Length: 68
Image (tube, rainbow, N blue to C red; front, side):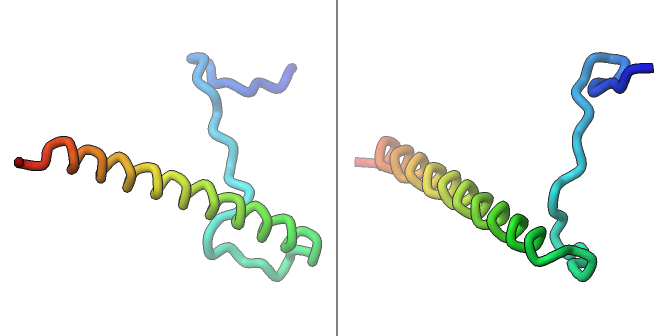
């Protein structure tokens, strides 16, 4: 039997996260911890970029709809 990545209805199966906030770290090696730290730093950069983009969109909308 082949391994199936999708459910019977064709929807992709959600993979478990690589890191979960609050999970125990004592079983991880130093290299695994470094890998996760880098993953989390990259995620922070991605989240901050999304926040900056949303703030810029909000400022543009506020300027457009500003009563004048």
